[in-house]
View 1 (tube, helix red, strand yellow):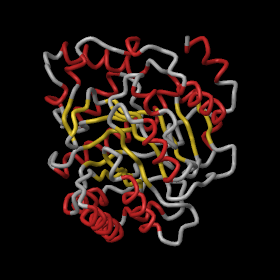
View 2 (cartoon, rainbow, N blue to C red; view 1 turned 135 degrees about the vertical axis):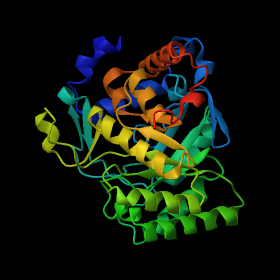
View 3 (cartoon, rainbow, N blue to C red; view 1 turned 90 degrees about the vertical axis):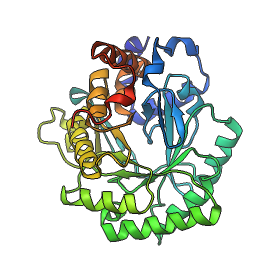
Length: 348
């Protein structure tokens, strides 16, 4: 059905198509059984104090305001991350701000954290009663005078309802945000967030989402600060400002973060580097070009315990997770591997 509808959807403005997808997901039109796979228990993994039914998650950016997360669980995702959520509602950057690069199986976005704000979003999560593992990705408002304070507000607001909180310091579309990759600024931010955790007597996992555009010398510094300040896992990576030279689409000239297939190798290399530097002591969630069982397998053996996707969901439709899980299980069986957890980092 998606292959029939896709040409029509791709004639519509990308953001309008996205809004239509969110609206249609609310109706939950397809039965859960359509998205189940045999032997999925081979893909289950324990992390962050939770048992994930499979390692394939939905990255932040798709369900920004928590409008369809339970419907997304029914499509077979092992976990869903909503957001980025800011303390106050904001419209984001001027439109158009999402661009398809069809020849490259990629997207460019400069959305700018458009979302409904943390109060509306929290009430929505409460009323929906989540049916799976739900992460909340938090960030600062565009016009805030204190970004660190906004992060603390986000944690303070969602610690009692989320399964984990992602600290998004890596979007290229919010001015000054990537400055937190500096070790001193990152340390100050994490100290403040851990104080909130202590004050609230919560042990909620804090995850750190990192840019793919950092220099290699930042990797050891970020890893050291993260490990010393109780970061539970790293999300590698967000979208990239670079890697445009080899792209085929004319749309590559648009400003914003590039995601999808062109990010596949970049993010996998970043996973390997962080895994080596940390000696596998800090879990990694791999993001960027996860569009097949093979791509998923490569990220896992590079050091990722969990994965996230977004762009391949746009291009390949609602059965993308089922297909990746089936392919991943076939690879495991062909290698004589009984569980996904046994191959994390084995390619290093």
